[in-house]
Length: 473
Image (cartoon, rainbow, N blue to C red):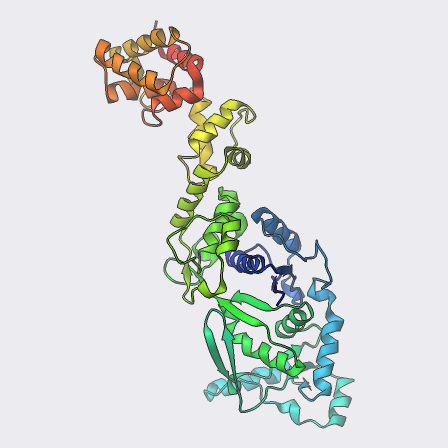
């Protein structure tokens, strides 16, 4: 079997992290099986369409490294890739069902349907459509079709159940008696989600439908449509919901849910991909850090969990920190430049040294500005600990170090540690009495990086200049 999957978002706004995970699982499965992935835009609900949403989605996928084999920007044999451009296809297939007696026109007004629904709710009965229009004669139907707005409904077979094998959830059964005669084609000529979904998946050759569990209850409707058309049913896999820490469904009310929000925070695309891959799936061991190629190699639908996956912000921050520590320096430098707001030179070797050191001390790239500012600014006039600089022991310390540093152009971590010991031996200054004033003088804070690390970034001449600037007299 030549595996083909699809991701089919609606153009209603940003790319949700749940959507990213679904797209990623489709991508990983397709690539692990040597198959293809399609991007299809489900824009039949024109009232919900947001201008620019498609471009935003495409841009997000480009940044995240998910490349589609076919899409609106990379057309193949399955286009068009916007459902709004495929309306004639849907009408053609609906007419086939009507001709075979498997679907029928419904002329019921919204007022009648609302009244029917309320009456059934009062009686605590199923709110399914009562098939009022199914009893109309052919002549009545022909007359009404020419003069009244109408929809087309699928005639659900009576007294049957639908059982299908879901790769994630095994065998799932639905009773047909619980399934409404769903609307396939709306009065405006646009298809419903169910019709367009099935027709497009079949015509595009989709073999596996990997989607969120919120679509599980729609699956029997889709299978009934496949059966009505006498088409092979694809393999389904319904992935678990993403949850807030309190186990409620992940929503914007409790935090960021858009991919772009996390990218703006300074989450690396590689880290976000790794993180969402593990929300509902694992390879069967304790490994947590994976490149995209490793994910492709390890991924299987059978290892997707059935229970909801908690979106843990702390875990994401930790994972991003691991990527910041371990990605090649040139990649981190490139990412970092997008977040630096300080008026500094980001093209010199010093910037590379600053980033190489500071990436071990942050979880988000947005934290870099506060972390690196001390290496570029030496403003101590209004510092709360400024008095420490003028103490006699501090002044002796600064003068001693200026003398020692000036006598040797090359210093290593080992020789700097030896200088710290020599300071103790000759001046009797050690511990916080040494490190606090020295760090304040050359870095700008009493607490922070160790002195050899500061020296490695600033260099001997800058260290001497900063010490001289705080020496009195």
